Image 1: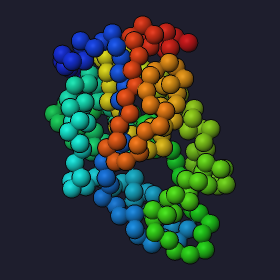
Image 2: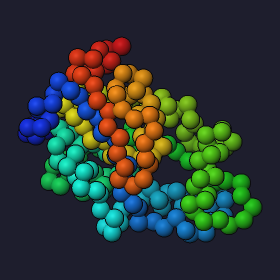
Image 3: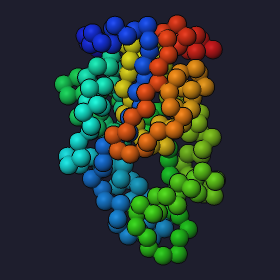
Image 4: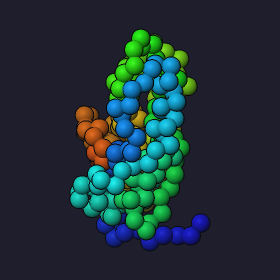
Length: 212
């Protein structure tokens, strides 16, 4: 692969590492569709294949952050890839499958048809409480978050700063892991579309974290 010029802001801040976790933009798939519990898995697959709408653009602050970072990565789900490419403009976006959203169950036990958004909430609660058999358990997602944090720390060490475009639940797992490694950032942050959370650490201490 060819080398890419690192923005001056990223080079200047190399001694102060930065990882920015961002949620993707608003997807095109409507969450008001009525679903039976047995159809939830099919809806999730359609959701994962959906892109983002062009009617809700990212806030100016996020555009500024994206323009200043040394590297941009994204989950391999379409809504995250499109969001990252929108923010990166002509710059390359590195796809990182480890950043994809925590998996959901194939079906949920609800007796009536409900809006997809309500089904999503029920499914996520069931996932948290281990009331279902999802493709990925909470424990497995936490282990994946450790690997994702390893990767983001390495990229921040190499490029000075990195923007990771991912998802609401899994970004929180990564944030927890980063704080455990000594990165300074918010414990609670918005999960709205295009929302961000910034974590910082000195380059030396970040390398120490990677060597543990």
